[in-house]
Image (cartoon, rainbow, N blue to C red; front, side):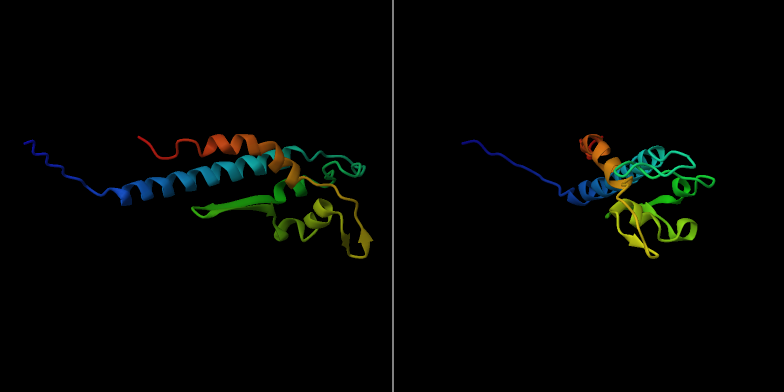
Length: 130
C-alpha cells in the first residue's frame, strides 16, 4: 500500500494583489498612450480641418493640453477637461451643435483608440508572474 501526503497552501490573495497591481499599471500606461496619440493627431493651423480629420488648434495648443486621463485599478477615463477647453471637445468629436453652431464631425479620441487597440492586448498579456 502506498501512502501519499499532500499539503496545500492557499495563495489566492497574493494572485489577486498581483493582478490588481498589474491592472493599475497597465490601465495607466494604456491611458497615457491613448492621450499621447490623440494629442499628436491634432495639428496647429489657422484654418479649420477637413470634416472627418482631427480638429486643428489655433491658440497655443489648448486642445492638445486639454486632453487628460485618470486611471485606477478599475479602469481609466480619457478626454478633454473643461477648465482649459470648456465643453468644446464633444462637438468636434461627435459633430453636434454647440452654442448655436453646427460642427462637422472631427474625431480625435476615437481614432486614437482604434490605433491603440492592438497594443492594448499586449499590455495585459502575462500580468501575473514573477
